Length: 335
Image (cartoon, rainbow, N blue to C red):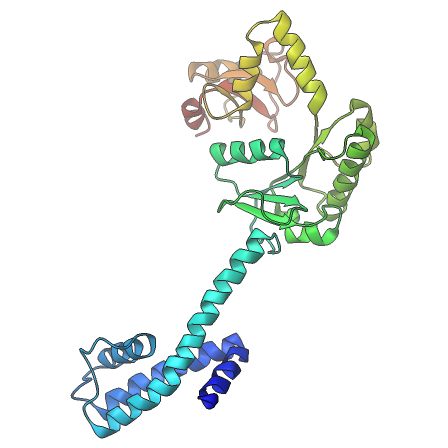
């Protein structure tokens, strides 16, 4: 008994690849051996393979079994060695899956995908952002924070536990191959100066590690935007001021909040979409009328909302046209 216990403990310490190789070698050798020793009982390699697998993984089904002395002698050897070896292998596989899940939940596993969206800083705002991405596209999301466990378990959401100002964290999130980065302000920091300062430090880290990635940051104080001039930030979101201005507008224009909410969400109604420039569009009027006939309303080129006053101007090939329409119309327009 001590011998088998010692053997089992030694097998547990064997390198995984060595264990896998030994297991496959044993199965292959045993398949050939039992077919050679008892050709009448196991006329083909498949019957031999079937018996070997049922023997080392279960107690066997009894449909095939050795009948000669040599065959049964080898079966005894297979019982002693094979069941223990395969048992350890199965245990290793179960352990690997458990370790994989643990590392994924604890955010200690590197993300190797591409064209994903990186969200830095977990909060209710980040949760809503993830849900919106999940509903409106098939893009994967990488969340970076310092929580002990993943805040959201989803096959399309990968969690990285780490400091977003560290290059190692950027590497683990594969930010260089990301589609975009969203930096949310730290809700645990009450002072706008400190919160925006942390955001600036994170943005600087991204700039040094992945300067070409599209970056959007949340700012608490509009006056701090000028401090980001040396950092390649593509867009700023003024969290508190946006809510305040929207609240004031709702007082003077009843129902305006419903319009904003609908345009900012892809879950219902008409939404805001970006479309490409077609070859037969020479002016904004060509684009406006063509899109209108298809059920979409052209409202902007980039951040320029005065399209209706520039309809006869030539349209650039790299124009970023934004339209308002429902999802079904957008699917037709973008073809």
